[in-house]
Image (cartoon, rainbow, N blue to C red; front, top):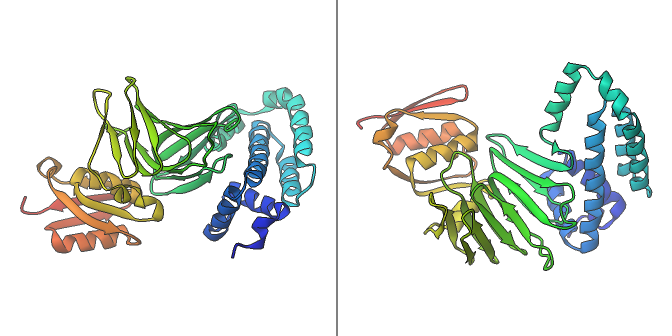
Length: 340
């Protein structure tokens, strides 16, 4: 049975704000996600509160001395005031009228601090950016109700007008999308060397800057891919597509479940080259791994699964079946394969 708060807008509003502030449990996040996706009215309500929250963040952080007004505003949202949107607009107009004077009074230190605060919220005017550090994962709910799991070392960027005329996001890194279906509004993911277009489906996109190719794994539905050189193809569930160095796209024989299980806090390697294992472990644990004589080991492949194990536990198990020694100093791991 779903918790009662997700049935009432007044209470749901407080949970939405807690979610946007990053102060919500996994259980409550799950209930909130279900509530948002359960009806168009709920999705619209979430989008309204989120847009107001983001607009206030942008303007509140852009000038000095406005923290008190922001706290008052957030309190009004959480208590379910019926005229929250009109209230926020009055505040924004007041802030905008004095913004020029306050900006002149900002010190260099204050300006740099503002820039640092904004890097995870606003990339430019009207653009929202979510940055997930190495070693962490995150989940966001877009204004249309689409749920996005964002993997370690990734960035997701979209306009605060998302859903009004288009549903476009920019991805650098890896993310799993559970897209809310809208027949009249395609959802598009802009990756480094291709574009993924869908109406409503579930798929994974992996497109890190330090990878030579972009990888798309389709779990449900169908997606249309367009490479930077104009090639187009349609994917079916269970397929994995990769971009090639010549700008084309081709299919690859890989297990989709193995590629997307990271969102469920699991990492699976199935006959995976050592270099790929190292790359994924570095992001998973937030460390730098150095392999002695890596050039001589590039053809070695490994099969194992990580669930809740720490890096030390994985290395100890790994040591039982492989002739290695290892040293962990801070965030650096040095592994030496013996008898190479």
